[in-house]
Structures are given as C-alpha cells and as structure tokens.
Image 1 (tube, helix red, strand yellow):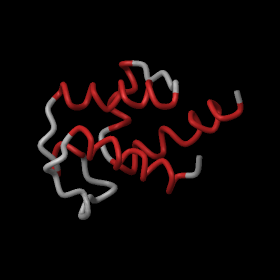
Image 2 (cartoon, one colour):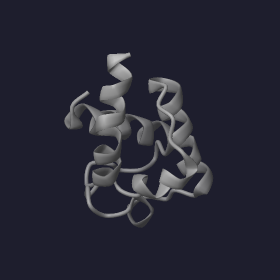
Image 3 (cartoon, rainbow, N blue to C red):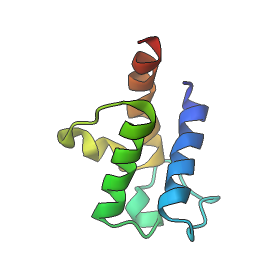
Image 4 (tube, rainbow, N blue to C red):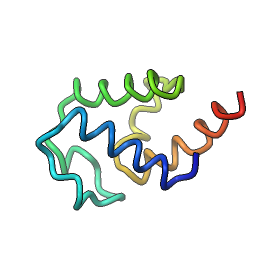
Length: 86
C-alpha cells in the first residue's frame, strides 16, 4: 500500500470508531487526541482494527508512533508493504 491508501484506510477506521467526528480538517502532524474526541479505548480499537484488517502486529511500545496521521502513515507504510509481500 502507498501512503495515500494507508491514510484513507486510517480515515475509514477513524470514521467507524468516531462516526460523529468531522475528519475533513484533520491535520497530519497534529496528534489525534488534540483534534478528535478519542480516549484510550478508542485508540486500542484503532490498533485492533489495523490488526484485524491487515494482520499487522503493533507492539505496545510502538503505540506512540501512531499519535498523528503523519506518524501513523509513516509507521505503517513499511509494515503494510511487508504484509503485502507475504
């Protein structure tokens, strides 16, 4: 997957988890928690949905790398490319 596709997938997951949020103005380098009404359970739901959809394992120590859209896309790009090659 290319970064633009990953971004769209993350937006899709966010819209499922927080259907009332307006995601159109999401800033890539600003943390999700500063832009959206997400709690720690919502964040875990994002991680679990990524695991379910793409069979990508995200260790707990890497959760901080999923703080913003930009860092999430950067983190997932090589991992999802690796999953696609399997």
